[in-house]
View 1: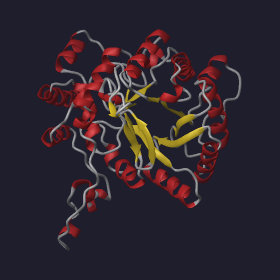
View 2 (view 1 turned 135 degrees about the vertical axis):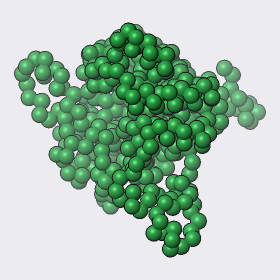
View 3 (view 1 turned 30 degrees about the vertical axis):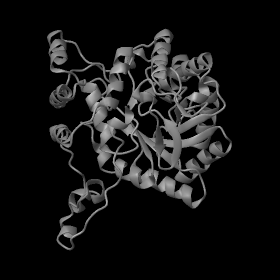
Length: 396
């Protein structure tokens, strides 16, 4: 594809092949330019096929090539995924393609990445291969760099809060690896909002590196994010990288559900046990199917589009094992849901804010009006709303 020319004789930006190549700034406090959908590499490998299904190396490279050739540059993995195969294969793929510096690579520490191997061999001490502490960080990052065949990680996540390490130790240790040049930005996953806020405040108070992105479970059915995580990210200037936005394979059309039931087939779900679709999932799937028919998309693309439109700086992690599923997920970037469609989807699984939000209301800056009757009966106030998400039209 030829370059656009903005000044005579000087090449301009190459037009994107797909909306995946219409990059976005990661967040208010991180200037990285990333694709609007991240490639989730948890399924890259064969070690955990009983939990996640198998993706051999040839299939994995085809998936990665498809994502990359569509303009994708944002890859998410972790030290322990597929017994370390995910990082190893990603490193080999980037080395073969010569594209390491083109990619924004996110990985994680905290999970015990030697646990599976030690269990198989029945000897060795794995006590410090996992955890939030400094030694776990040191050896995990050292080994991750070897596996992905690079000398730096773009984003390093704390994989989850394990309640064993102080905020002070964790943030000092993380800042040290940033200052060493081995890590560029910090993220955190699966951690209470109050811990993240405390950690970032400690970082600010001590001139350390704060977290700039949060990763966790969020979709139209699992809406716990709305209580504390989304408001916290808005206040902290953090991006969101939700997983499970497409239902982790559990949002299915009526025809697929009926076919599975007819054949007594179970649906694979993490952490691996097959089970049938629940009535609640069936209800949400039917609503997604209805909206999909209205907008000309699929159930999964509508589910992803929903999260993209709910709040700014959202970068859903899309996984899967088949190229057709990956390409279908990309269609989410072309979908614009109306306010009525969003309200309809949310009505299927209403979110009931916990205390104190059920007393004082949610942040009126998110919705443009207060739901706190004590404020409403005291003063007439206008509210400046928080910024909205980038519309789908901007991705075209």
